[in-house]
Image (cartoon, rainbow, N blue to C red; front, top):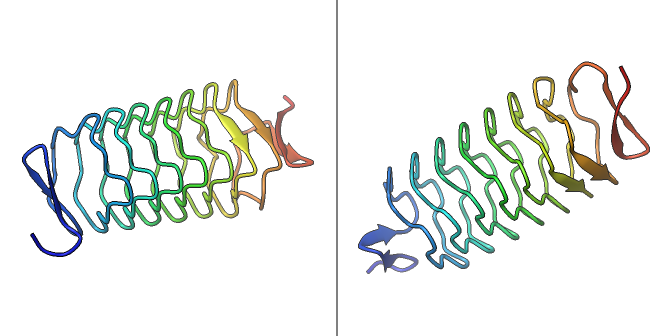
Length: 174
């Protein structure tokens, strides 16, 4: 296999791989380089993607329930319509990513970089947002009910009506 590539569940995984619709539930892709890969509609239910490099990858409509993205690089990626419920995005870099229509319910997003992210239609129900960078992120159409936040860094480009950031915390005041 070429350097940086691996064979997992019958799939060749590496930079630029076409893994559209692949079934990779529960696999260990610790520190994998999947830069620019196409994982659209893939089933990645509960795999280990700790410290993986998924820069500019397409994860649109993927099943990412409970994925461990601790310290993963998803910057510039397309995660639109993906299910990231109960995912671990601690210390992950999602700067410039498209997260429109994503389900983040129950996810943990501490110390993550979400600068410049499109959160249109994102479900933040029960999400923990601690020490995250939201600089220039668009949350104007996000569902923030039940979100818990503290020490938010930066100023989003837009928030939903009635929401504001006060002393680093998202606050709703109708």
